[in-house]
Amino acid sequence: MKVSDWIMVAAVFLGPIVSIQLSEFLQRRRQVRDRKEWIFKTLMATRGQTLAYRHVEALNLITLEFSEKIAKEKDVIAAWKAYLDLLNNFPEVTAANTELFSSRRNDLLTALLQSMAIALDYDFDSVQIRRGCYAPRGHETVENELGWMRRGLLEVIAGQRPIPITIFNPPSSAPGQTPQIQPSEKTS
Image (cartoon, helix red, strand yellow):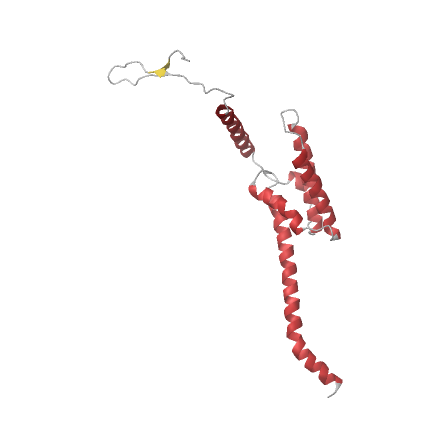
């Protein structure tokens, strides 16, 4: 047998094996890219709702899917560490420091999203990331009201705040008239 015959036999046997291995390699690579894109897209979609479950879930997946060993992703991990440090170590947010926390959080989230965009070859600048989302004020109002109600209820449960009670006695009414409710004196 000639060398060319041996090459032909090897190609016949190895061709399908190499083809399958290459196909599996490309599929795994695509899956890795898809997971990174899911994280980025989820964070972009929820950047106006940072308390949303999906937003928090995507943040927690960053260290699983992005790596410091990949040059393009090194900045993603650094930005995530800075953002995580703020989220975990900022003193209790009070009325006095709410604006400072919010501003710093927005800056670090923008930096994180921009580094992810660069790593994933998306073309977003920081202004587009920061200002390019729609977050209705109504959502913020509802979230603030729910927080206010929860705090109030917890204060009542903890015995730090009483429940105000007012007793109303309807006056007797003539037939055909709708009784009008008038407040009586408060009783303790």
